[in-house]
Length: 200
Length: 200
DNA sequence: CTATCTTAAGTAAACGTTCACTAACTTAAG
DNA sequence: CTTAAGTTAGTGAACGTTTACTTAAGATAG
Image (cartoon, rainbow over all chains, first blue to last red; front, side, top):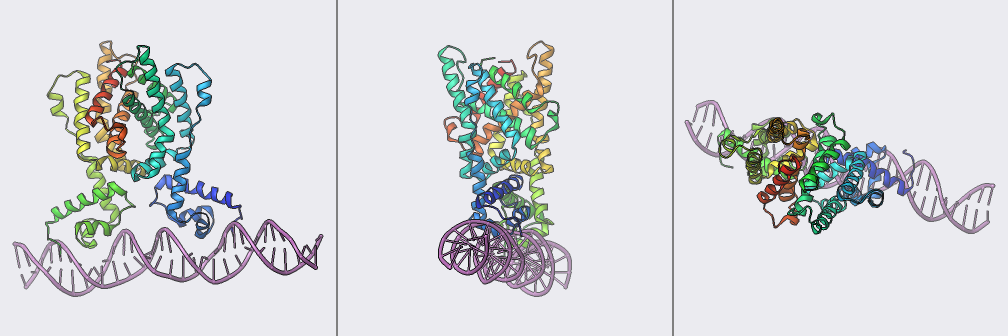
């Protein structure tokens, strides 16, 4: 018999194992038995904590989707120029993703499935950047700089380039970039982005 | 009984139907029976033309992955400045993807599965851009412009921003960009990219 | 006729899920 | 402090379904 855990601990352990497997192979790629085997527990245990496989999957998805970065520290500590702040926010985000790449894969799965969670991923993970860029460029325009830029499209560009760096390093593991660390890559990209919005 | 087709026509019709379904739901999300039903044919027909479900999937994947754009027209017709050429190539690519969004989804599936095809997708679809950017920036540097840019990272940025635009419009269908056509979006992005590499 | 293609009707294995049951812990009366 | 009753966590086999795949017989064009 498997070790007896408190309901809350067991639930957490199921979520942790399911997350790794679902991130790796997607919903249909993982069987309930496989999850149970990894937990060294019988399949029925899963149904004590989740009403169905789908329910477990959605719990995994929403746990990841609902995680938000707290950028307060980043805003407080350091100069408040647009580029510097954006760089600090981005590096914080990128480093947190690098620590847990399963997040990236789950985001992709959610996007392909068109699930509700895909929207949450955007709201909690990317929206802060889009908002900061739209706001920041708006302020700068009042000062007569960064004029003639569509802030929304700039935010799209930013999101795309950061995402591509994350994919290249964490999903594709393209060895074209073996000489650049992820942080290094992101710093280059931000410098280029600032030029793109006429702040370089 | 279903209409009798020549082997080659039947094979092609199977590939066409399987492509739509696999692009939509991924390998494990589609059953052999489902494909057969859509073809109005019995499952055994599939096994006459493909040795297994996996074999059929790989045929779909490699058919898409091996498609290459022919950029000759684009290179010949029009001025040969770096920005103009890049824009024409990109628009040609983007329009071809818009005509067949299943390609995009299959590329994502392949990436998540880490399949061999993922490499082919890059080689046939994105590599031409990466190569053109690396070469073009190299030439420009000799003329003393666009200096101090890492061409490889610039190519990453370019790929990311184009991909993000495609996702936003074709996969996510984000209505933040309902006012911009895909072509419009891409033109803005290219203008920004040129500034990012000091050519704006 | 006959070679080729399609079909209906299967197979065994894997799937998600539920079941009757047992082991371990918690509680409170004697 | 014991001990019996009650509660929670876990088991493993079995359920009905769906899966990928096969076989043997029927239909049709050349």
